Image (tube, rainbow, N blue to C red):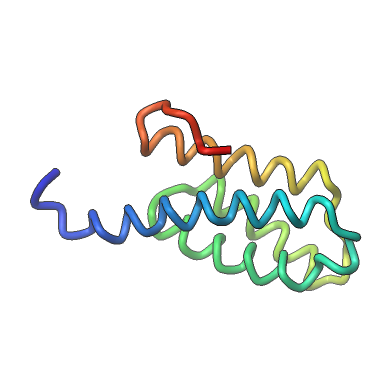
Length: 102
């Protein structure tokens, strides 16, 4: 994969996924009303970029969360945990089944 012009972008996407897992875990400890805006921004960004890299399931899940939040619906801890799990799966796939650094 030495000549893959997208390799730096993929690496940055993977690192962003790691960062997003940490952010989402911290949001799990916050009141659903307090976490609404930072979660909406993260989900909106993630929905677009995940789709660009072919991670349609993650893109759809993040898009659903973004939509719910724009409709003034609260996102449950279970739904947030589902997003964390989806991100961790992608990180493991990219890194070859190694630990996610959690």
